[in-house]
Image (cartoon, rainbow, N blue to C red):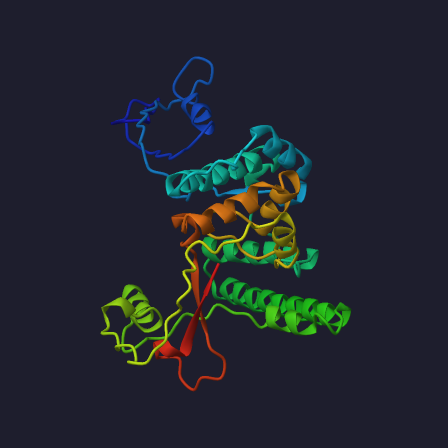
Length: 331
């Protein structure tokens, strides 16, 4: 359809195509033919419902601004009572309720926000100026693709790459100089860490096939294998240990919590060691009673059986094309 109407009476023609998004669309439409702008363009508006190509933003917890006093007050306000757990169903229900209470307390005490791309610690203002210069040279090479402009763009790219390498090296040297003897190896490992994909395993290159090879090698189906019979003179215990359980004390749980390694990754349930510490501090009777009920009623909750498994290579192996050259760790 025609969008340009020449005043000299010649045939109208289509000359403009504009793709817009957001609030600027209204400004573009206002340039249509009217008495205010005396424009000779008429607008034809087509709205396209396109799916967003950007992934949804990830909601992160700002643990640095956590209000643990509010967390403890929320735990105490729930009034959880585990003194009368009568069986397996009650114990499983108690585990689910405590998990829900912990997550609700975190929602109240820890602010959340959308994650932003972290700024590289080695970045400086000179790199920002160099990046702007590279973008300008690229734009000139696109608009005027002459030999001189293309060579200038290539030189500035090489210069920018060299500046990045120098900035990273300077930052690494600065960190090594400021560290102590206790953290030197941790710093070195941090700087030497690179993303290395797992090579082909047992001749398999597909991701799912690699996972199947690792699962079969590291987690074999033991229950399907034939079991050897017990020796004929094998002695079994004559004492029934079924009911030989002792109460779990608050001191035992406190001692176990003090020996936890804080700062590690959480599992699928999202409960960290810090949350357990403040839970025990606000209501010291919850965890001992829960652990005692699990021992008495022979309960192992399903939530405690699931973990995030990460495969890491064993050091010193001559080849990493075999599944046995890796070991799993659970988060």
